[in-house]
Amino acid sequence: LLKYNNVGELQWNKTWGGNQRDGGDGIVIDSLGDIYVAVTTQSFGAGQHDIGLLKYNNSGDLQWNRTWGGSVMDWSMGIAIDSSDNIYIVGTTDSFGDGNGDLCLLKYNISGDLQWSRNWGLGAGEYSRGITLDELGNIYLMGITDNTRNLIILKYNHLGVLLWNRTHSIGAPYDLFDIEFDSSNNIFLAGYKEVTGYRDMFLINFDSAGNFICDLTWGGNFGDEASALAIDSSDNIFISGSTNSYGAGQSDMILVKLIIGEPSEPPEPPEPSGKSTYLGPGQSLILHFSVKGGDAVKGEYSTDPHLSLIIAWGNEGNNGIMAQDTSQGTFTLNILDGSGDCVFSFTNLDTHGGILQYNVYVVSPDSDSIPSFNLSIIITVSIVICILLI
Image 1: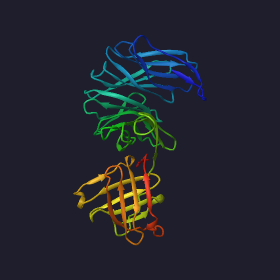
Image 2 (image 1 turned 45 degrees about the horizontal axis):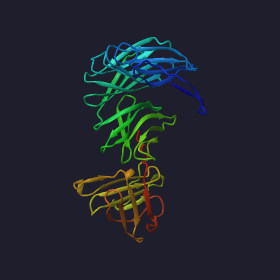
Image 3 (image 1 turned 90 degrees about the horizontal axis):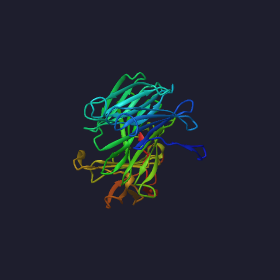
Image 4 (image 1 turned 90 degrees about the vertical axis):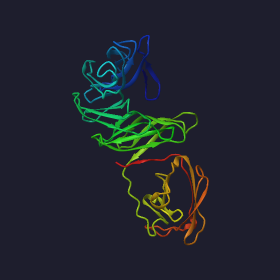
């Protein structure tokens, strides 16, 4: 345990443990400035691993320590504190419940007295991943099932009464490491998801009743994952983690900011649908055009988000649909003819390498027509800013 002042000077450091493996799993501070650390210990307690709780004062003096567990393995995965300075630890227990891994929740008061403990499982191995509290003192636990790898969210009140539980299938390899609320008590969980063989940052959103809203992934060509999550008073989401796709080395620290909002829908394109370019909200550039006389293609360019692209061709999609991750490619858009219906060239330099020709003309529903001969756009996208629809 290390304490630094606000200019980064080390004030003191403390260690705790025995002759086996002992490690910290989370830290909180109470209203008096005392420090509580959740630990997993092999050196102390009743079993192979036990859950521990340490209390230090602001000077780094150990006030007390507690252990909890049975004869086999029990370990902590997070800690939270409420407005009355009650401390909650979430973990996983093999000692209690069905003996095959259950989520466990412990409540201690400020003196280190255990108020109650709860365990929950489905009989197939369930493992905790995180804990958070809402402003009413309700407790939310995040976990994963072992057999189906489904996501678990549990809600308890401050008395330890289970209010509801939810499971959700992700559909791909994943893991989660943090859970937080926004001002409307929507629940956000962050971790990673393997989409194309590599890990991407993963954010999943539920409402206050535990109903799924949406999820998103973010990343590049290599492994990227989220490890911590924070939400400010304006409901902006900040995710920290590691990236192998961006930065200077094999693995760099990364910080991503997501803006939560409900963006206005772009206006309907003017006739003829499928062959037009116009300005959308916020001066975004909307492109509609057809491929080989088939279904419409829509591309959108603006400063926030930079670019999204979906290409469809054939009747009713019979010939296929392609969706391009814009964080992985460089797209060049050039108007080749400046008069009337002009020839539009789209080049995907990253994946396909070929040049496809489209017939489009340039109009704007909200302003004068855009001179097509002035349209020459080169877009290089390194980061996609995602907007969650809440």
